[in-house]
Length: 279
Length: 317
Image 1 (cartoon, chains in turn red, purple):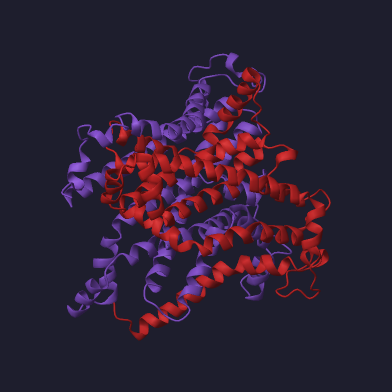
Image 2: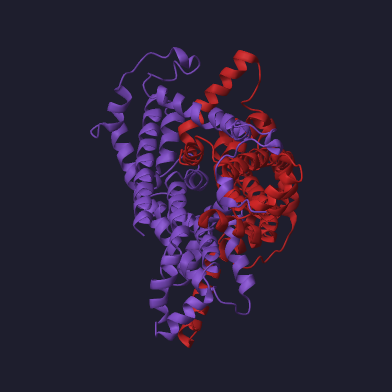
């Protein structure tokens, strides 16, 4: 496509319009987090006239944000690690073996992604309670229950994305490793995985983002002690006031690490997505 | 080495170096995935379907396995359009369909526009691309909360902008009343178009440059090139992208939940949210399960038709 003057003009218009759309909430978030409470309660203003960092200090006291942070990090990290391990094995099987039921397996896994969360929220809640009464393992209201739930949320997409990635790695590589005396698992860990590192990273980010941002199950399955950030942020709205400046500050604090990680690794993510989509 | 991919496809006779690996090996390594999917998705789903045939009110919730049979009563109530439960369900479905079509359509269009415009290098492209991806990378609730603040009547940015542009004289309510639907749509598009952009951008990168050059030599204008080259070459990406976006948008719970809290306006009553409220606020778990089951059947039917259609198209191609 040759770029005429018309195209360049179109590009400027599209880029500016979309950038404004994307950046508006980000700007409001940042500027409001630097305003005192009276200013965010009054009429909206673009620029913080009484610039202050106190929302960033107060947000830790209004709500036990630190504890929620720790909970979210623990839950998301453990869920990511397990999800990744499970997805690596499953996608290796899907990519390298033609076994009976392979098609059924991939279809079944992918179709679980269709399930609306509300569909299994209540049954899962009840099954977890029954497990507790039957064998005494507490899952509702613990981090363990949330980890167990979250690790499956990213699985379908991860398996699909990773097997696409593995398909792109020549079989001759693992065949050669097997000739050298490697078993299939050694071939996976020594040859296939290192070659698929960008895909693995992409899947890990995806899994982490999924658990970090989950709201529905977090709001039903947690109690005060193990609440995650997704639920904790709501507590800045009290009967008497909504601390918008602290909400915005806390949202920023919650977002910055994930956004930076994603943006640094976005190339792998894009590559992983295409490998899956194009096959 | 003469062994190539085509011979590797068929299971070979066990040779000495293959002894350690039996036919069960692939089953062994997919086993964890199956176990966890069964525990968290399949078994709860089947339980949910079972529950839709039970009389599951708050009196039986503690001892749910003893709940009395309801037969098809729950389904009758959900599908009875003259009753309040049935009307709520139907309204919610209609709103969800409108929401899904608008959000997926516009997100795809914006993503496509941005991907095409950013296909060739220009100064600042990397910065723009990074900025465009931020809404997707942001934890879902953080972005939605920022919008919730902007949609506040008196201290929000939206009314401020509309008033200073002279579009509105007085601040409007955005999170209650009919405007709530538009608020929901805007937030959902903001959140999802970057994903379309990401996938389409990745797809565009796989189209070789010389195809466009050849078309340009034949005198094809940019719009024609987009229609005859870009669009067909992006088909595999589009198929996956649209199916995923359809499912995510149709099942969207987070956007209304974070935007409105539990007191939702009727105009923004998306189906997942509706089922959640029917189950947890009015303690009507039997009807909630029946709605969930119907929703699942619909999604399965729609996705199934879509996939069959795809397979037929790709066989003809």
